[in-house]
Amino acid sequence: MLNRGLDILVSLMGLLILALMLPVVAVLIKLDSSGPVFYASWRVGKDRQLFKMFKFRTMYETPKPLGVSVSPQGDPRVTPVGVWLRRLKLNEFPQFYNILKGDMSLVGPRPEAPDVAQEYPPEAHKIFTVKPGLVGPNQILGRNEEELYPRGVDPVQFYLEEILPRKLAIDLEYIENKSFCKDLKYLFLVTWVTITGAISRQHLTDNFTQILMLVADTLGCLASFTLAHYIRYEGFPTAAVTATFWYILPLTVVIRIPVIFYLGGYQILLRYLTLKDLKRVFQGVFLGSLLLVIVSYFSGALFQGYGRGVFIIDWLLLTVMLLGYRVVLKTLHQRYMKEKDQGEPKRVALIWGSGEQGLWCLRYLTQSQNPRYEVMGFVDEEVNLHRKRIDGFPVLGDCHHLEILTHLYQVEELFVARPKVSPRHLESVQDLCQRLNVKVLRFLPRRVQEISAPPPEVEQPGEPSFSTV
Image 1: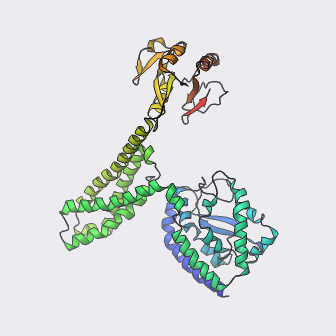
Image 2 (image 1 turned 90 degrees about the vertical axis):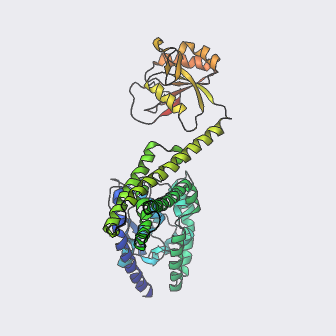
Image 3 (image 1 turned 30 degrees about the vertical axis):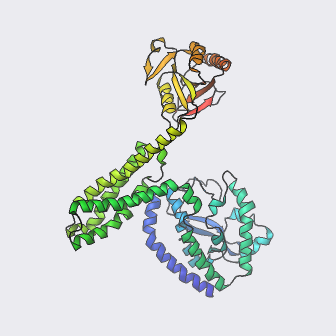
């Protein structure tokens, strides 16, 4: 009776917190992907009774279920917002409704999906004699369970053979020594582990660059608004203006950083930074600054005589800061990699085909982040192109000159970048290159082709790729 009273009291408090966070979380989930805000799934409860357990939806909505019931790290079914909901354990808050309803308790073994519960050994059936819980000893020892899965393993097999036996032993020990005081202990411990375990060492390692960008952008928001205020007022003139400044300053971070995050500003790798990535950051700064003005306006800050020019100067400064340091770091990385690669021998290559596909191949080989090829030029059957230059690279001859060109330039690889070539012609070139010890690769910008398949006659949309001919 004491446990049930605690369940009702804490679940009511949890549902109150849920009601407060629901508008924000619901908007984020709906903006992130289509589908319902809540997700209901069948779980096995006390006495093997099935019940629907509720969570915030963290996966993409599909017409039929995809994948298995366990979710390892890097699960592609999880949405970007879902990753953070799971990391912060906010997706579990709707389960307070299950606790209030009586399907679950605050503390107990976590409820399993029916397919996994069927795999329980007979000695573990005792777990079904108690209500499943929102928290329990397993949440303390394995806060981020998805990180326990090694890369490339079968998640179901690994869960059943490695994770589940350990969990069952812990749950059975909890049931054997269950007490009200121990439940209170688990409630406090799980609360502490939930807060401290939101960011794990692996998470920091995997997202180190993105975290640094987020910290740098936060400092940039504070610095740009402070500098804009100082430029506009030449200091901090009056108490009223200074008070308004301190009121708006934290809003520059609270409003802008989530906008930049939502637009994908922290999902990029600096070494692969492109104009599209810079555009996302620019849009994030612009929309965040516009939202900052709107919030400041309706909160009354702009009615108190605070200079509107501060916001314009702040926007310009922050745009230059955030775009500027990203470009600088990208340039430094390129220079570092270029110096690093100078001592490494590059593969000497020719490109067979000087049309659009050949130009695409040239740019891919010469403008990649870490070029490994020294392209000498093109070979092409069109005589009028010989001794001409395409994008600065010469057309050196045709395939009949391959033997001479190989000896002249020490060619190691030939890239076939022609959308149409007869199998007989390709075979003759292969035989010649085999005799010359030159590797032949097919560049496929719009379609992946098997080695044994004939050359494509019609190109299909897709990504560049290479195949050995």
